[in-house]
Image (tube, helix red, strand yellow):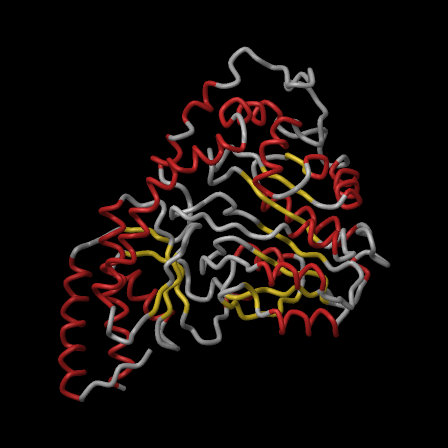
Length: 422
């Protein structure tokens, strides 16, 4: 990342960066790039949901969606998303609006009840650990912290997690019970797992007989190009490799329709589905089937999902293009940063010189540009290199986003040249 500069050239660049930063602070901006949530225009694409289901309250099988029951979720909705999430309909559950809630519940149930293949409840074991590909999703890490699960960072590669490290760790340590995976357009790098990575995850020997892959397929249909990425079927690969219970598959409509009123999904082996249903029956008499019926009537089928996501792409793609264009114009050739160019998903990862990320985020906040805290992409909020910054382009309007990225680039130049001048 380093570009050699003479002392005079560096001094001039630092003076210019300081002047640009003073001007930036003087603009009195108030911009927020902290979270990858849909913009109002994206939510408007699903406005018709609010008028559904009208006077219809019967599912395809005659179920009265206004009443109790139906822990599996509506069959017709599960049929739509079985293809999207690569899970057989009979092994897919449709639940409430949050896949994070399902992940939380799976951890709680594993701690308090014996998962298929386990010798005891996780809470009875001396230590529980999860592998955490980094950079990764802060809410996954927060769940582990909440329940006292140790986190072991594993580097990400262009094909997914470093599988040599993963295979070694799961083979030698029975306390390693799981791994967090965002397999398509991962948060925050945008990496999609290769077929070879999926095959190795499915087949690898594990010291823990109850090892689970938490497969958070949050961006399954969130493409940003004309060439959608397709990933291998993990659930099928696990079954073929003789580990049918290994995968917990999660997904939702949260970034497809209404983020606060979507539908979440869980898919796994028949044994795992039975296990989750038995535990969930003690906390719920059934999901919001009216909302599920809304989604059936609105989306209609898997092709309807893909058509709807083209509307989402039309709104998101210009924002991601703007981020790339501005970063290239402001930071290209400086040696101060590299950044990802994702083919889908919701984030761009910006890498700055080691030891600079926290200071860049602090300077940006002082200038009125709020970013996700540096370190959030790593377990315990600790990026050992202090180099990764997550950019969430989705929510701001295009003009606001451009101002924010231009301002962020100013902060990168200021902090980067200050470090070089020391």
